[in-house]
Image 1 (cartoon, rainbow, N blue to C red):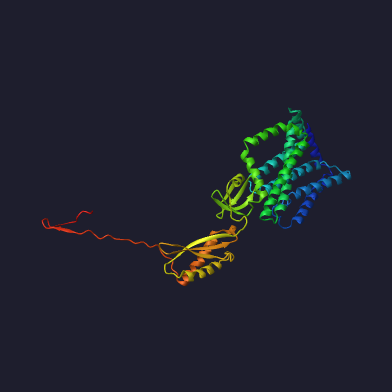
Image 2: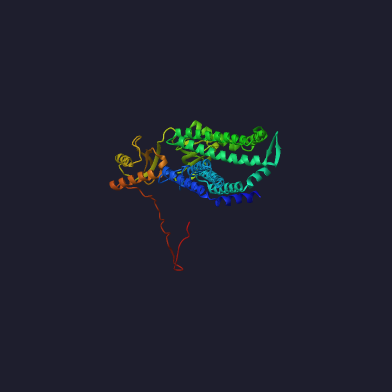
Length: 436
């Protein structure tokens, strides 16, 4: 009966002589919101912005501004004594639209590489639009009343299914707002930071996110009328689970905060751990990401970085010594050649002049004189194999210019003489004596 009455009121409002005023007010609100967002955004949306999306209507600003303008138009029509039946449908739809865009934009910024964002967008959209339809048709209040009748005791408090549903929705909304605020704070903290300063700001951002999430969830549960003391038993069970079953996970989280706080490892450092060498690209509360020069990435638990030996190539000094072996033929005037080799290495842009390059006579090889080229670089994150190749090419050009020979491997092959041939007089045959 309620559904039919609501639909009848809606159809009557559409045929009302003043329905054009409501439709015009909504249309003007849409156009005005679109124009304002277009002017504020400019020709292209800022990278990673939550307020603005790839299109005008994709960001949070458009539905928020549209909702505010529509509500203002409704208040104006009420003041003029005109009917506002259509606004009873338009306003819930715009609220749903704003909730969808807010959730999707925040999740996209907080988890830019997650493939589940698209699934979350569809799920939130279906739930929001279904709630709007249920609200407009009058079904939602009846469903909430039925859910309120389903209840049970949790400690000294009575918990209903409606409380749990409202608590879940409130917690989800608070989580979205928390992610939004923490993402904005993290972006502001990490902007322009590097090295040890970046690590400190990273730990500050993680602490702020954890605190905001915890406080937000407590506020969401209190807002729906749930007694937080009822969760004391559950909290004790969780504590026991952390103490026994989640030891490794808890250790990784604690180790992450220790690494970020003491700054023994920083984002951008070149480290070697568990036979894997790479540059630290990110330090989270649970793991650290290492990126090797060949593009491979290793996810190392933070506990491993705390309990094992880590070779940090750039903790106190980013300069790294590289070596490259080369051989020259015996008879080469090595003392005269060494200064020219050093000068050839200096010509490579990434080779440092201080400390200066060196050439060492490291060994008297079987085929020639073994030299070791030693040089320093200050940017290991740009790769080591490429600068070593550039040094080798420069030295090779020097050898070709000065006629220095790089010896080939020499091997001596001895050929045994053939055995003598013995002629027998009786048979007239040639017989070879057996080999010894």
